[in-house]
Length: 532
Image (cartoon, rainbow, N blue to C red):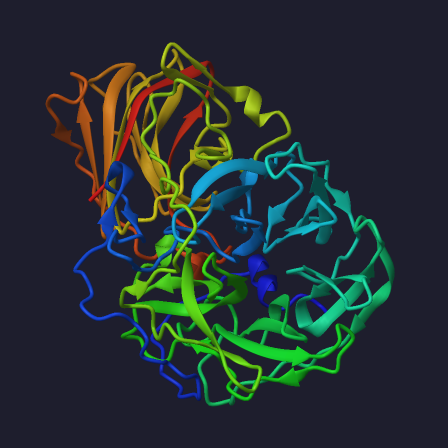
């Protein structure tokens, strides 16, 4: 089986108006009434799911947290996501109640390619990550650790060049397997660090009617769960982006890990059926048991009209039925839902503001497509980030980026450049699509559509405070020469609603960040972020 949807990484996808297709997906009305007008607010005024009254409102984790891989480990839950070209990558998040999550550490520091949907597992007391990458060639790696915080081993290449989205599974006979895209699998060695034999095809996924608007069949993201004497396989079909009605969750089951697999009679279990729904392109689901023994599904989706935020993590209640199947109960996830009971609520999320007393690479900041020595460019000293310049512009400078999960926000920073250097603040999708404002000693440089657009005169010299406001895709820049006490609006506005996957490809999000180019080090102080 060859790669399907993610071949789109090599091309450009076009967005457009979508006609709706019908379908049998059951949208059960289990959502709690009286939806709030807004989310509860946390650090830096960022929205959080926990409403504080026994309910939560999706997204579970906002911003680009796609392809969630979740692990229940006693009273602890760990979850991670596709990190693509961001390094350190595969940041692992921790929860004890399924609702409130904290980032811990990044498991992957060596750039092995663009990281797609991983499998996070624990077997015989050891943690495993099975990591598919877009590289030359594409492949799947495995890394292991005795502690969830690492150290994680150097990735081992399993040389699986034609598949994505691995899922580790253990059979009723103790055999270990990797289930793969396209309904395929391969046997793993007893230690899980190598493969045995050849890839084999074991499952033909359920197919939707040809009248539905989808991106493509693209069966991917298999997740295997054992429950009540059955093995259940959840699969995503329909394509991860493109038409909002495309991505969906289907399921099958078998008494044996070796099949045969029986299709769920209610397929698809999750699918967006209307452009009016809050969440689009919902899919790539896993099942997990909560502290109170209730069951839930985690998957991702795009927020209506906000492709720029990437695919966000969603939580959907699950009901097991008398015939041994299950169904999702959260409907379109636009309403608050009752939280699972029990567990311990950890302080949720993290502040994106940074005083640079320490360098939080991986947990907060990531380099884009870094070279092997990229981390050596960054250091902190006297409450400042010192970032050595690289390249000439954001496209070749490997900028430092954050994940922001709110539709509107502003961020600002005191910036001082070295003689001959350039630095600034950006909104960055990838090295071909970004916008922002930089400056050198004599001139500003405006970036738009991934290119330089103008170089007006700079009267501030080598030090200034810069603020970027993203108000529902309308971008404004403000400058200050007195540390932010007074501001002057920069005469260049932008609109960025098209800076997303359906235009550019790549499965990424538009991320706030900073860059330094040219000679010397740029000094960044007092980075402040606030959701609006």
